[in-house]
Image 1 (spheres, rainbow, N blue to C red):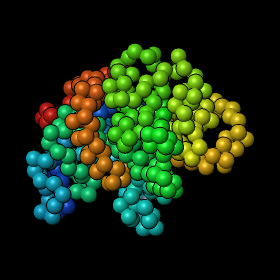
Image 2 (tube, rainbow, N blue to C red):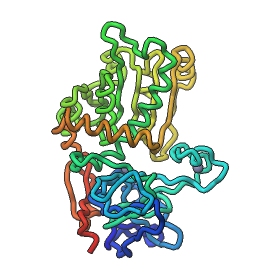
Image 3 (cartoon, rainbow, N blue to C red):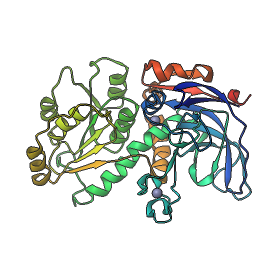
Length: 371
Ligand SMILES: [Zn+2]
Ligand SMILES: [Zn+2]
């Protein structure tokens, strides 16, 4: 079967040929891969900034955002059946017996750093015909979500953030709202990429009055999605962060999904009383920026603020993402579909990685790469 792969040593990105994987233990599941989403992580791996092939290989098969169809199960599998639609998890537990996170099935909180990740670190990804994995890394998805299920994995980032925001705001006995007149929390999403827009959907759905703050002009496909779901799109060209803060009022949550440190720290200064600031983007390390540290520390203490970084996602966030994607699909079918800009056959998998156009681009596998 064919696969889209990167050779970090030779600095090449090309189609490779692989043997079809077989089930070798009772708890394994075989998936026929249907679609794989492309994101900034793939772009970085294909620019050789990170990405590690599995032991014994000089290439790494790409693809971590995916959906497949179960075609075969081991004798002990109970979570899925052949014919089910399913989304596999990206991160696999580390082998360290002392890592309580991985030993608890929460490799997203791994202490050792020796976890492996599909399509990123020491495990082949999903941009190929078939994949075999242990059932506890496989999440079944309702069949009616077929056309959007590839968005489950990027949505898990927001779901893990929301689970943590809820845990933190349980410190507020009045239900975490700053706005007693309509009991709605205010959230600002920084960045209007797929992670930002899916985060905005999750926040609107959770009852937040949501602002999406991004660098695109007021009229563009990203702002259309934000406005269609009932969020307010605010362009950084037209509105400063100070103006945004006076527009929004007390900002209870900032969901950062841009990986831009300068803007993040400017927005941190605008975080409201009892607010939570969640960072999900990984900035490229550039020139140091200057920040007013005294003022930030002053605000953190006197306003009871929390800054939180979050990466990857656990099984609870996958389940929440699958549930909420169904809610979004019924509530905003056109806006959700509009996140997917184009679908490409595997022969052209390099185009969406390097050309970078639209919101989210997808590689269609549909079993054809199994030939
Ligand atoms: Zn991704
Ligand atoms: Zn671990």
